[in-house]
Image 1 (cartoon, rainbow over the protein chains, first blue to last red):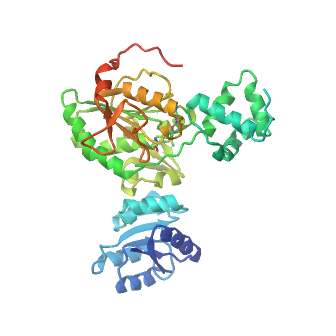
Image 2 (cartoon, chains in turn blue, cyan):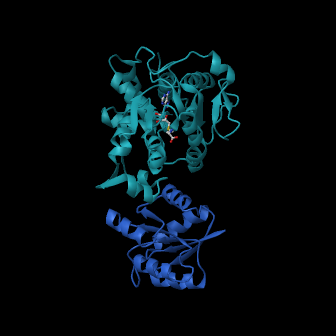
Image 3 (cartoon, rainbow over the protein chains, first blue to last red):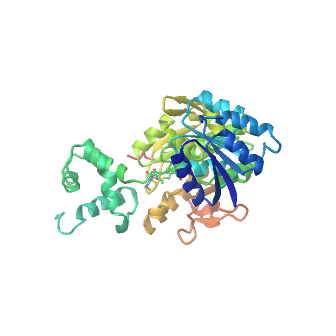
Length: 121
Length: 294
Ligand SMILES: C[S@@+](CC[C@H](N)C(=O)[O-])C[C@H]1O[C@@H](n2cnc3c(N)ncnc32)[C@H](O)[C@@H]1O
């Protein structure tokens, strides 16, 4: 079973994502900001990270940069999932090493198809 | 004709209209969808309810209304690279064979029959663009057809909203082949130029589009009655080059449906013409003087 770490400061979004991911047979972990997410990753690397952009303590971008610099940090597939829907943000995320990008709001089909594209679902 | 002799009578008439015009059958278990799908039509024409709508349909001079109802009842679901594995197969198995077979003419013709809002045809076009160098100097024509003018209009516009653009399309291809315009994403003009869209009813005996090397007719024949499906298969067979390929949706098959096609021995999930069909059927070419369909 693959593990997906959902990183979002919104409890509601984490709940919705968890629900969808569990129906897609993922084992789901949660983190409320980038710092918590890094702690998670230093314990155990997930297969996929579903990553919000704007969060307190540490943003999604800072998390991604730190993750990609860490040991084996290139391994997890990182799917941004954010309301930042402008071309500039999307390009910046890809340049920083994100594998896919989901523009919020999203539905089950969107998430499933993006996870398929990164080879996780 | 009495429309009120049984409950659901109006729905039944509407379902009958859809079947007569398109071949699509709505089973009675799905009648509930009819009313929901017609809500926008009722609003557009300021018609209070389904019974009044049916009465209006039976009147004269209502071609626009009939067409609007038919289009509203059709299932137009589509998304980019639907059944990814099939697109990979086209790229890695079907295209190499066709590229060899057409090395002299350097010309390829592909038909997406029942193309809906264009995602399937544009997915193919993007795949060719990904392999630009391999296809340099080739004349590749992709024709998308559908019975519904409203979906074709959207296909031609090449514009997709946030939900549509994210379904099946990788962010890399989205950035490479689309530009953002407000909430929507619009396909680049060079990809759009690879695809032509036109109206066509697949149950009509002939079109005037000539022959194709590859036909995709995916998720269209699923809801046809058997005899209509048989007719559609004959039409597809006549439109396919003798060494061409037919591909259906992931859940569809020709087995037991038609004698015109065989499962291809070399490539799984792909169909070729029956040998008999290859030699017996009338030869059509691009210049064949078919009468224009209405
Ligand atoms: C479910 S969509 C499939 C779109 C696309 N091929 C795909 O697989 O994603 C089916 C399409 O077939 C069209 N269609 C239904 N009956 C048709 C007919 N008799 N002739 C041509 N198109 C038809 C519908 O309008 C609809 O857009």
